[in-house]
Image (cartoon, rainbow, N blue to C red; front, side, top):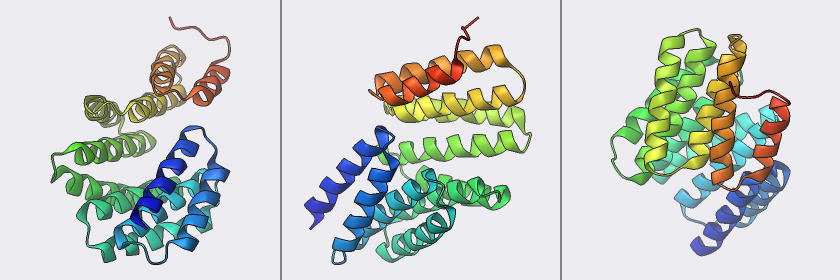
Length: 219
């Protein structure tokens, strides 16, 4: 059963990277329907992926229920790393739903748990927690802290060659600069994001950002 879940997760991640969120959501839903006897850690992992796919599809009520289920499953698994990932997911969802203060609390709790480990997964979790905290800091006008935290996120994610994470940090920073009216530096950051998405082979994402930039050039 574990190997089957691993294969389903691998396929789901491939679909995510191709931005095929409807297909990924359907795959995770089917996997959950057939993985009732899987290990608690595997079920928690599937629930986290499913919740994130629902969030990407803007099915917010379904996503909320899925993140609640994922958090419960992570606690039941007694896997500290999975609990950290569940807190990370809950923080992302809560912040995207408008509750920035609670989202920040979830993300700081996740960051503390990831920081307790010093392996690849711990560094990766730190990077993603920092990335999402930076976005919250930007939305709450703590701008110096936001840019510093984006940089810290990129440092961690670059160190483990997580190019999607590095690219996402550049993209979110670019969006913050756009909101601040700094179009030139926003364009520079978008081009940085495109280069790392391309490094990961995410052609669809690169094309989407190129279309968003239109005719703007880096100064």
